[in-house]
Image 1 (cartoon, rainbow, N blue to C red):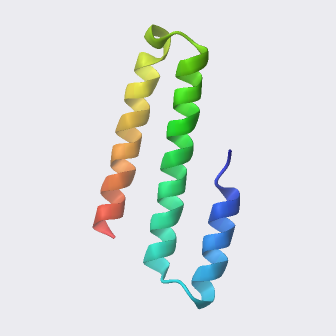
Image 2: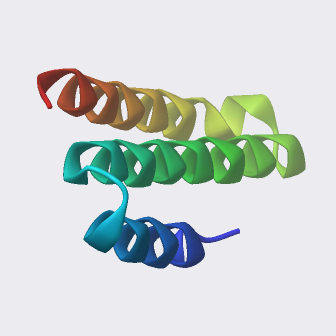
Length: 72
């Protein structure tokens, strides 16, 4: 569950066939998805009251990433 593979793949494809903007958007979406999955796994393992603060921070972080995609 890491974004290294996606980052390397999109970076290499962007050299020849893919636009840089599309590659950046793909990498950001992969990072957002990775963060959400790890946050929900943590929330599933722990109690929801314990992880509520973390979930709010993760959602705020992901929203800022999505805002960054809209700017591109």
